[in-house]
Image 1 (cartoon, helix red, strand yellow):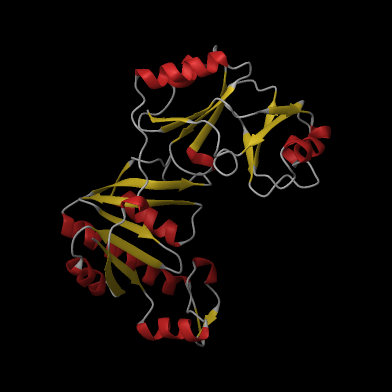
Image 2: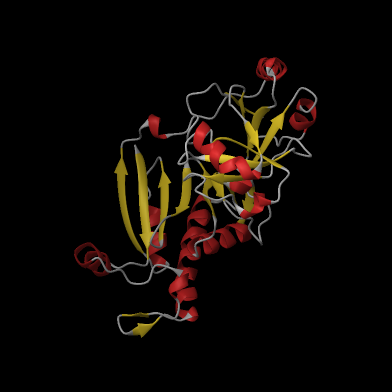
Length: 311
């Protein structure tokens, strides 16, 4: 059994109106300056409400007697300005927790669950909701959030083990022996992905040959997930032939990854296209000497062999 709290500024009457009329009050930092129920949302109004959410998270941490959180399920699409690198397993203190809560409420291009230990987690959701979950009763947390001036719904559901991501096994000797054998057996460089978090700035992608493998492996972050695709087909061409080549070999609507070729380093400076290439070459690749591409292994190439482990 898992217990959940949905915490928000939305009163029962506001949520009822949203259900029946499809109209919320404000739910975004970007709506400052707009009028809701005849009143302009000011920055002061917004921050006053935002402070209540920070109060609620602090209250949960105080009840648990913790001063740190571990980041889980991290997604990083843009680099954060005030927090440095974000990755799964990073430990953050109370001040960083406050920054994370505020920036995620404001629609940051990164996201993370805050693991507070003992199975208790906090997550910022859509429409200005804050979610708390735990394997035990959350009544005390609900009361603390209410004292911060927020509204709370709590419910419980049967825990389904299939809903949890199973981490890959540790990368031991046998794993790296399999990777080396696959790289040595390939006529072309093999794609190796280091995933510290989901998203563009949570991953490093490499095309490795036998001569690159040791250097790449030595630089992998402890705790990162590593995925190796020995059978993924990589195509190289020129910018002028790219559109026709993609349409012919993988289809114009396929989810692909583009990179410059020849590459000066094993690490790829890549562009991920989840909706196909389209009729034109992206501007960043127009002047390239050569370009390469392959099917996005997360979205399109799921049926190919993948060697996967945790560093």
